[in-house]
Image (cartoon, rainbow, N blue to C red; front, side):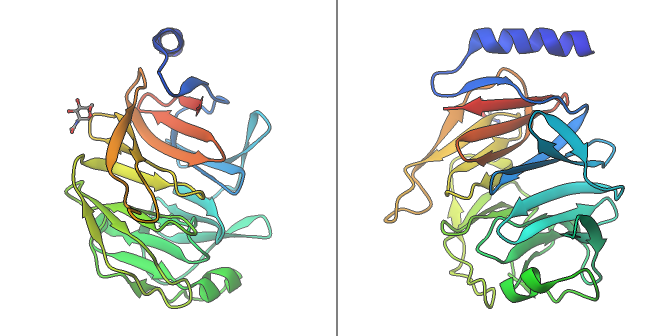
Length: 261
Ligand SMILES: *[C@@H]1O[C@H](CO)[C@@H](O)[C@H](O)[C@H]1NC(C)=O
């Protein structure tokens, strides 16, 4: 398996891509999900072990089993394989009581967003609650009133999500102090399994065939952008994240690609 993967990587380099230059990233065996934000990079493998990248090595974050992890202005948050929500406090992932969530995102303007189990609702944790939470007691989430299976926020460029039918939605603004939203815009064109918006507002998604796309044409006049541009990768991709000029792509075979423009 390793040999096959290495061979595929060589083909990858040869295939190249017009816009993005990809190479293998620091190896984390059976990586499943990655999140890059505020210069930090965290990831989860298929055994629900969470890691942080320091230099070119991955270090185990905690002994807690996590299936999704996120780092951003709201801190470091994760969802366990039993859908419990965790926050990093003084270097430990501490469990909160409150709602069960299958995915949480800390990339917003201080608020944390998440989706409930099965994608039945989208939730938001106010900035004041998110920042102050010390790992004791229950968290009080506000409903955003939309069924989503994946949701990701940026500080100044809104939030992007996909619903259980893989349709894409964009919210221009979530007010961090009260979780009020500007409503949802349906984004036609490509169905996605996941979407991540970076701290600078760059948006990347993966479709059901494992193809990666970047949203182009984003401007203050058209904050949802105008089109999807394919980011060619020679392997099927499971998950992507973008921060500070680096696009991280996790292949369905459990390899990590690191791409620069
Ligand atoms: C994913 O994108 C590729 C490239 O545009 C396309 O050929 C494929 O049909 C898409 N898959 C789905 C399920 O939409």
